Amino acid sequence: MSAATLTAADERVVRTNPLVVLLQRPEIGAAVAALAIFILFSSLTQAFLTPAGVSTWLYSASLYGIMAVAVSMLMIGGEFDLSTGAMTGTSGLMVGVMATHYEINVWLAVTIALAASLGIGAWNGWITMKTGLPSFIVTLSTFFILQGINLAVTKLITGTVAIQGMSDVPGFEQVKVIFGSVIRFGDFSLRASVLWWIALTAVATWVLLRTRAGNWVFAVGGQSHSARQVGVPVVRTKIFLFMGTAGAGWLVGMLSLFDVGTVQATTGIGQEFIYIICAVVGGCLLTGGYGSAIGAAIGALIYGMALQGIVFAQWDNNWLKAFLGAMLLLAVLVNLYVRRQAGVRS
Amino acid sequence: MSEDTAQATELDPGVPILAMTQIAKHYGSSIALQDVDAHIHAGEVLCVLGDNGAGKSTFIKIIAGAHQQTEGTLAVYGHNRRFASPRDALDAGIATVYQDLAVVPLMSVWRNFFLGSEITRGWGPFRRLDVAAMKRIAKDELKKMGIDLRDVDQPIGTLSGGERQSVAIARSVYFGAKLVILDEPTSALGVKQAGVVLRYIAQARDAGLGVIFITHNPHHAYPVGDRFLILNRGKSLGLHEKADISIAELTALMSGGAELASLAHELERAST
Picture 1 (cartoon, helix red, strand yellow):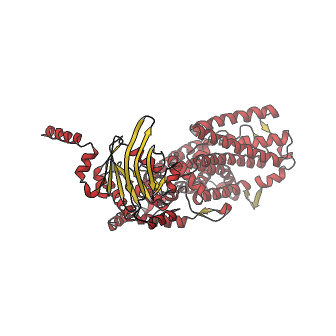
Picture 2: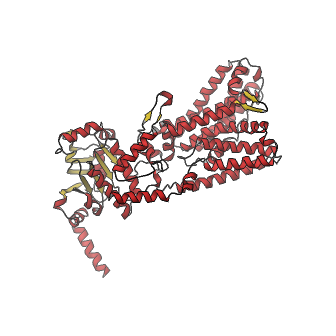
Picture 3: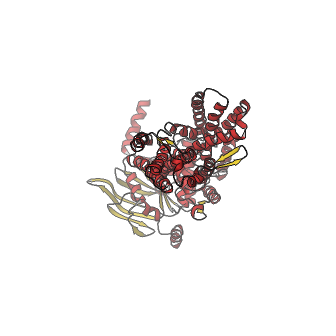
């Protein structure tokens, strides 16, 4: 009897195509696409492969990448956050207003902005979990609230729609070491944001694949009812994920603010979908329970390369949007195939 | 905890894991269950049969700790118990595998096996999953159930319904269950898959577990059962040892004997 089950099991394992196993990695589609984009622009333009060129697209990708990694974790956990773009503006504006207008110590201002961002993330999570409303709606409302506040409050306090004089604030240079440093190797300049991006991707991947918390993220996104039955703290896990995207929004806000020394009240608006697209291109399922932080980072790399590559190639910038749309559709089709192969039979 | 209950079994194998006497459950003025007696020893399968609305769910819920009996006694290893919560029942070594199995289809077999009770090693921020140990244990535990997976990394959604059921059983056994309640494990499965599950039930029984198998299909119950409790409209139609009852009698009892006979008669005439 047990011999019969043995052979049955073996047959089933043998049937799995090695190519399918490789394709089941969530990152694989994005990795192939990234390579294609890299080869495309390297051969089309002179500037793309120069040290200065690489620095440019890496920097561009890093800011999207930090957000995409946090957004991918939230999406694996089965939720959306549309307030992430506005959040990058809000955190920068908070620090800007506090430091330039109220002359609060810049370190303190950065810390207060972090606490406020995490608070907003926790609010998104708490409302979503308490009401059972789709996070799409809850964070859409947060998005509009933040967008309104960013403009209205900034105008009310400073009289303009941008923060000026940030670089004259005492302590600015100190904080810049963390968020705005540039390490130069000849023509190649490595910006702090790239290091943050790589570190965050590594930590996120480790958490997702090698910790209990990561296991719970996959479980609450994959089948939250089952997760609850076996004792996973569903509400707590999801609230932490929302705080993660808001925290990433704070980080990107700081990275931009301390890099250029100014922030617009409209910063980040419209970027939230790009983060989601990067995560989806990187293999996240829209329905949750599947995806990868590395994939999301590669998704952001694709976007960064395309964004700067199109500039280097001197194409019309509008092609970027068309490209983005096509990438998204392709990624979703690949995901659909993967999901069928992974066989969600139930 | 699993060690404690294991010792208790070894102390006196003659004491049933679970014995229920004159159990009744009232919901307000309606009587869901009345005068039910049943018992089960280690290494036995108790089948609970009944049509829809016969009181099977109420019966499970009392044993699983989701509800408390209104009357009667429930003894675990000879000690009277009254479970305040499912956690209580679990601590006593009674695990329930519900129809939805509480698995996450896209997660791997070993991650599902340990979900919510992951094994970790390391300290502080470096506390991490002990992946190697969990994979090994999951593989070994499943092998005991007769499922030999070469790759416990495959998503549990790729397993057949019967195999998923068995993973759920193996999981509750590993986490200390001595008595497993299976709520209609075969009802959603095809003939072949139902056969797979029945084989695993037999394997769990041979491994020394008590299995309470809830079903409305006497053809599934009869081959594996040692004892049959038949419920009808909240009342027990008796607890029968396998030696004392045939499958035809079982079927007849379960569907309210006379009614079925007349139905068979009717259908026979219609078909000629």
